[in-house]
Image (cartoon, rainbow, N blue to C red; front, top):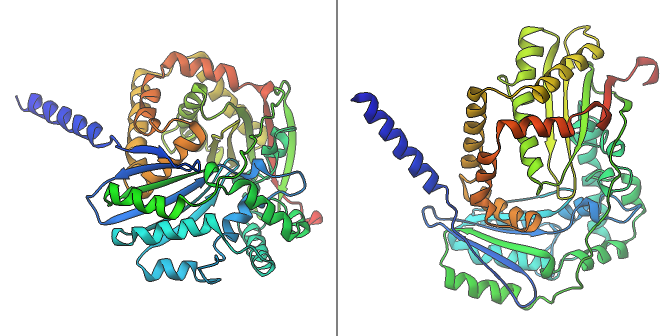
Length: 442
């Protein structure tokens, strides 16, 4: 009887958890083309105001890499009504926090305030969109900030070129602008003129190239009035022409060696080009990455770290993007283990996945992991705001915030095997030895 009651309670809890994760939202569009998504949750007195612009590093002109990321910094400089250097002070003084980030595909800004400061958040984001001050002093200031960020995160950080893809993308993409890094080159930014920065803003920072999300504690009717008041008068800009560049398939192994002044432990890396984040296969590859390299219970960790003692750590960086993705997998050598041995062990695990179905037990564990990830991704207002903006901007389907987990649930063991066969082949990858820089070359 106790066992039956426990199962019933667990079933009820799971049902309640699934229900609780449903994210209610409404969506509409202003006359100027600004898409607005509202998610009302009055359980806590906080609200997030976020704007995602459909512009990223892939939209930059040749020879002007880094512009999208640069604007992430530049548009905190100030506006006609927010004095230079005061943006963060205003947010902090009103009990809020804020940040921004840039990818190859989009740029995202947000503020989270106590809910009585909703209007302040809307005003500030409308100021950023309507009339930021883009002048030479701001460009020069942020140029130095970006240079320091590049030095600290990439140039002087161990494995920085792998973490930020700068040592990988040029091998994986010949035509598509994904070949360039998000942070760009300092030479390109130094060469840019002020008029080019202004032109970039005019091209991409219009309401019809943006999605506004308000999530949290607010009253809908009043919020809509405020949105119309602050964003409605902003004029639409010419429609943005989207990047449409197709890469030729990789048909033979790309062998390469990269050196890093900041490391002492060499790594063997395999990199595969993967399909768009919107493609079903991208979801299957996400699961494959979890099976092979996600955590201490993953296949490669258990074999290479625990059992064979040949790797200090296994690595995985699956990057889903709007047009193409990349899947980086690899391992750090333990002691004097040859990189060829690491490569052989990785290939053995890939081949096993290509030729054998994963067990029912491993499959259920995988499903549980993705269920948990889904729950956590929507566990706070900031996460929900980001998800709503992303699903609308990059996937074109806001309903995925509730329905994406169904895609993972529907993936079969047979599908995992077939997708591994389709993408994880030796003639479709970059085979990269990532080595410490020799002393005589430093």
